[in-house]
Structure formats: structure tokens, C-alpha cells
Length: 326
Ligand code: F6P
Image 1 (cartoon, rainbow, N blue to C red):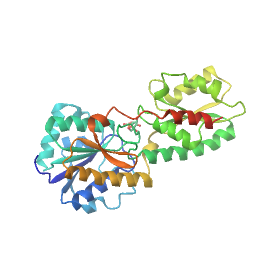
Image 2: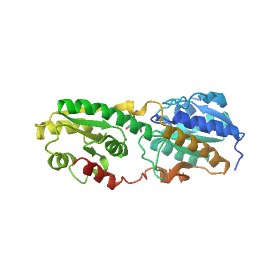
Image 3: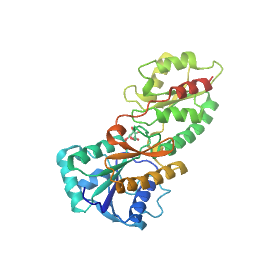
């Protein structure tokens, strides 16, 4: 294997709070161990358009507390083509980059896996996504901050829900996963969580209205995972208007505000540990693995296991929301 001297870092896909803390950790650990570092702007797009900059220790000063990503990010359709990836590879080599650290979610690590195999490039992935939908890891960078943002928003909505005696459907992100919805329902004391993982098992809305509501409850918060197939919170509110007109149903879609804001201490620490571990992985000759964390221990997760193998949703937590909402 050729000696690795220079590490390139990029962030890709949806931004997540803590990505900057990860960029900082990778950069400083790499410099500490004698590597040179290059920042690649706008994810894979910047590899194709050759937006590659030298990174020093000071390039990452004062960013640990910032949401978003100083490297910018993009969803890049050109990188899904072999022609696009060839241009990316040529630019990467011309810039002297020997290995990549890719910070992103499922789609970004899928791209990394294909690129790594096609051009024999050593790549280490860091799980940067609010969705927490990657296999082999209990946490992803950004998830905790998004969860807290949702919880704080629902706390505010509860005031108006209760004053007006309304049923609020609050739509949260998660791509196709219900972790944010389920855990924010637990954290905010919501009456129910409607999640894609349960979609084929029961009519969650009918169950909620017919069995889940204490009759004396005049207001309720239901957290709904985004779901284009069912229309998410808007689709549910429309059904309520038709099928259960006795309820005054309202919809709040939290949208992209869930991705913003200063990362929590937990996300900053996770990003710092994982960023350093990515450099250790390169030193150990690891390649094409994502850094995961299970039971507090950092692990190497092969891309094939990280992608499309998310952990099953905890059925006990689904029951807990129900038990605590009586
Ligand atoms: O993957 C992060 C995420 O925020 C998902 O929860 C959501 O489905 C998607 O990105 C939204 O993507 P965009 O910002 O491109 O609209």
C-alpha cells in the first residue's frame, strides 16, 4: 500500500450539527501525526470542480461551537456517474491527496464505498447525519442536537396546544427512519409517535384516536416522522378532519431548523472522538470503514454494514410512549 502523506476531508449530504467539530478533530489529529491536510469544498461536488484548499491547524479555529459545515456541503448527482467519479479521482490525485475522510450519512457513505472500490482509494467515513440511520453505530454526529431542537420546539408548541385545546401533529425529519420521531416523543412527553417502521403493522392514526387518547385529554401532541408515502403530518391532519371532525387538528412542520444550531456537548464530544479515531484508523492501515460507536466503544464498521443496515427501532420505546401517555 502506498504511503499516506496527505488526507482530504469533505462533508457531504445534509449538514448536521457537529460536522465542524469533526472537521476540527480530523484536521488537528492529522497534523499532530504528521499528515498534511486538504479541505474539499462542497462535498463530492468540490472534488469534481476542483475546489480543494490547504488546511492548517488555524483553518479550524473557533468552529467547534458552530452548526452547519465550514466546508459547505452538497448533494451531487455527477458523483453518481462513473465519468464524474473519474474527474473527482484525477483532481484528488493532482492535489496530492492520498486518503479521504468523508463526513456524511447513508448516501454519502454509499458514494464513498463505490469510489473506494473503483479507484482503490483509502476512505474513512464518519457518521454525520441527524437521521441516525446508519448500521453499526448507536449514535451519529448531529442526532443529539436535532433531538434537543425538536424537544425544545415541542415544549413551546405544548403551550398553545393546551391553551387552545388542540391536537397538534408535529412533523420531524429522519429520512425513512423513525428514531428522531420516537425519541423526541419520549423526550417531550408526546401522546404518540407515528413512525414509518410501524406503517405496515397497524393503522397508527386510528389506533391513536380510538384507543390511545384518554377521554379527558383536551390537547395532544403527536410526533410524525416525515413520510412522502402517507403525506406525513399534513396527510394525517387531513384524515382527522374527515374521519374524526370532533378534534381541532393543526400541523407544524419543523423542517430544516432541525439541522441547524450549535451542537450539544454530546455531539461535540462524539465528533471529536470520532474525528481522532478516523486518523488513527488511517495510521493503522484501515480503509473503507466508518467509525461507529457501540456501548461507548469506538468501532470500525465496514461500509457494507454501515449502509442500509440501520439498527431496528426499539419496540420497548414504542410501548413506553403509549404507557406514559395514558
Ligand atoms: O438526511 C438528513 C435530512 O435532513 C433528512 O432527514 C431529510 O429527509 C433530508 O435530509 C432533507 O434533505 P434536503 O435538505 O436536501 O431537503
